[in-house]
Amino acid sequence: MKPAARRLAIRDLQVRFGDRQVVGIDEFSLGAAEIVGLAGESGSGKSMTTLAVLGLAHTVGATVRGSIQLDGTELTGLSQRELLAVRGRRIAAIFQSPAMAFSPVFKVGSVVLRALRLHGMSRADAAGAAARAMRQVLLAPDLLDRYPAQLSGGQLQRVAIALALALRAEVLLADEPTSALDVTVQAEVLDLLRGLRERDGMSVLLISHDLAVVAEVCDRVAIMQGGAIVEQGPAGQVLSAPQHEYTADLLAAVPRLGPAQAATVAPPVLSAPPAGPDGGAAGPDNKAADPDEGAAG
Ligand code: ADP
Ligand code: MG
Image (cartoon, rainbow, N blue to C red; front, side, top):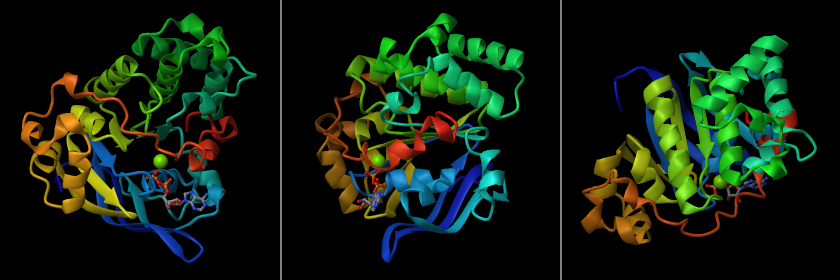
């Protein structure tokens, strides 16, 4: 664990559906301006961890115990009202299917502006911040006048990232943000995430079932299995010399990241097509991405 400032610190986190525990994390943290990958097969508890951090696990019927701190402030004890000031504003989230964050009947700009206004910006400030953020994600601001169906998946994901930027979020939870995108667009979105860290000092939790994606951009990696983090450490180390059998199995499933190549992890060419459908898209992600919850967060 880094001694560097921990923005997000999780301790003894448990997420349950009734008697069934689906997440049990002893310790996990996300430092300032750090990109940490959370990887593991479908069903390993990645999305439920995201929902717990967002304070949204109850919306899918789960209960949360333990400690989740943002810059030293305990989030688990906050009321939903208090959480509103954190979720979206300080901790933003993007999901596998950006279309779900945008209602098909509203122009994307109106969803973005509504979220910015919800977090206290004036109409004029919100419009200015939205336009600036669009340029930061290399989109023309007038795309805000379009409906979701008039944008590509990659463009929509950029708009969701722009919203996080406009809100000046400190932490971005990116749950399978590139899994639904084709490979070239995947690479662009990953570049953007790198930029968020380097230019904006944002801390990014990059969740993926795809270790090739994680290898490409992450400083550190945590490997989840059955709700627990079975291994975590610097990305180069975990991916080139996995200590846990499950990590080795995951690596073996990514042809270009087999142990032999993994030592040279980093070049963008490592991006491989998604290993398979995640299956999580129809689960909790839907609810979290409901525009009524504040669009992409
Ligand atoms: P991942 O994102 O790693 O694919 P999830 O966090 O979505 O996994 O799921 C973790 C576990 O929680 C899985 O066993 C899944 O079946 C269960 N789960 C997720 N959502 C629900 C739900 N709404 N009701 C009951 N169980 C759920
Ligand atoms: Mg998931």
